[in-house]
Length: 200
Ligand SMILES: C[S@@+](CC[C@H](N)C(=O)[O-])C[C@H]1O[C@@H](n2cnc3c(N)ncnc32)[C@H](O)[C@@H]1O
Image 1 (cartoon, protein in one colour):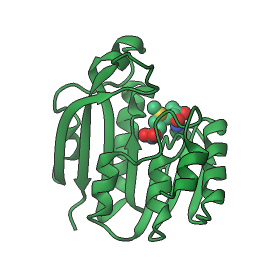
Image 2 (tube, rainbow, N blue to C red):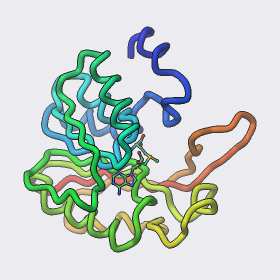
Image 3 (tube, rainbow, N blue to C red):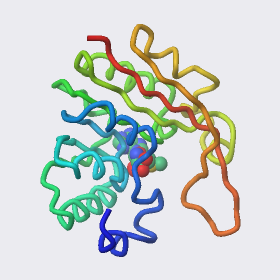
């Protein structure tokens, strides 16, 4: 990211920061082009990163128009044409085409268990053979879980790993710092990370 962009976008509009999630960075080392669906893109740090190199065409969707507006401005200012944004509830977005990649970063906890399972089940259908699903999800232990509606989807140990049975799966868990960060306050939650490749 250029110094100019860092200066423009630092601050309250980007509580999740400007840098992509680690699993998205890792994905970009495994696949060098393709189509991406970013579900719950937020302010767009992952969409911006993947589209920014020019090799990925990204469809980024979020239920919150204000976040979509910020991503559109960021993409325009960075002269990135290959992001299409849509303000929509993922529950009303049954994909009608295939994608090479689906990114679902820290949004499954916004859904109920049946809704999250429907979203995850759909990915198994619309990812092309050889394509990837890249997930980061808050688990059922830590600050976000304690502060949230606990009937929403917070996976327990290894439960996301089993979801992509038959695919090639990299799975790990770890503590993440929650956002937005208040100075001097440590707010952490366990997270699960999945990078699953559909067999060719
Ligand atoms: C915690 S943020 C994560 C944003 C982004 N993926 C990232 O990692 O920076 C969760 C996002 O999911 C979006 N979201 C929540 N429920 C949604 C739904 N039903 N459909 C689409 N987006 C949703 C929120 O508006 C929010 O932008």
